[in-house]
Image (cartoon, rainbow, N blue to C red; front, side, top):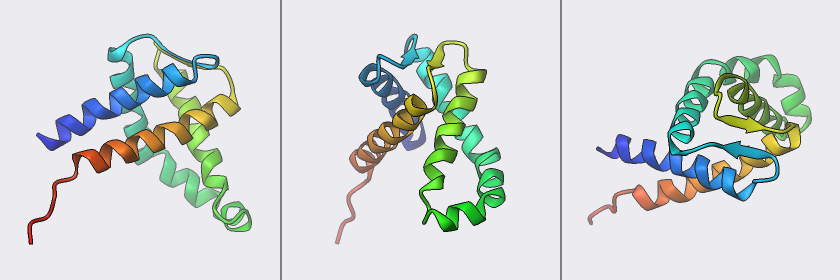
Length: 117
């Protein structure tokens, strides 16, 4: 049950992020937002580790900040594959990935179960 709730909240996070960045990120509806959440998850599992391994030297030199560029590239890749989701450029993708990670962090904190002592 928790996985389904997290999936729906990830879709909501995509929709809210698209609403905040209306000038450069366009999400047609909640269905496309859920599709974006699925494709981002798949890209994070399949593509992101390969990109991280290939860019280890530049990631070390930039003290890890290049990982933000990788996240933006993942968002642009999702833009290419999902028809109801459009990102107008690299900087919009960077902003989208940053705000999306903040929303996902907040939603993860909300769905955590409290530990009993």
